[in-house]
Length: 204
Image (tube, rainbow, N blue to C red; front, side, top):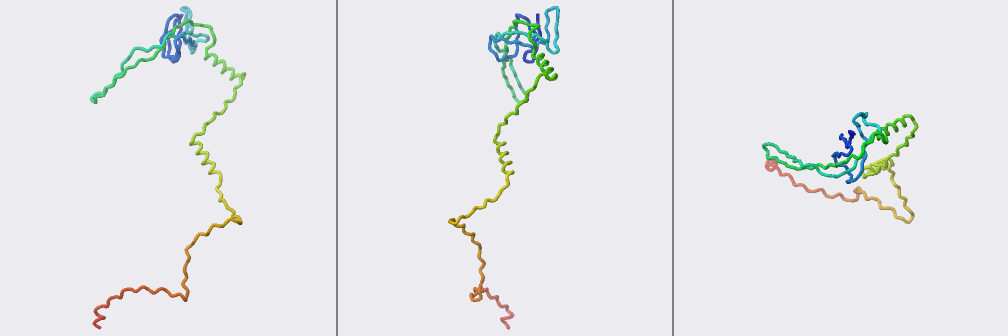
């Protein structure tokens, strides 16, 4: 008896008692896993093909070991420019032991989802409203809210009252325009250099 099961987006041929090597799974050795995404199942006489999964089928496995694959060499070069890069890589894998393949077990997740969708469409299941997520205020949002609050509130001039005991501030001094009275003497005009007489006036 064998089954085609999908694990981490890839399809594997699983048989009872055999091991399969899959991409690394985040579990320790000895951990048991059940995969319900069975695409095909066959017992030699009858074959069931899923659309896309076989309803009620599952594969029970156990992690045997976590190991690294064979080392590969990644070499890059560019001609005529002396560009050479050499790098090694070892991929991580997980080895699974297939313990059991069940054909009529609990319903798969896809089947359960389909049933839930049908119940929601029929109206027998009430959907709870989703609470609005709490948005954390950052510096940018705080500044934006403060600027909006400032622009919303009109600016008013504050009028200060002066009490009886308080002194009023001195008025600002302005430039006084001086008026010259009749009695005051005007300053004497500055003497200018006399123009030189011309030769014609001297002869005369």
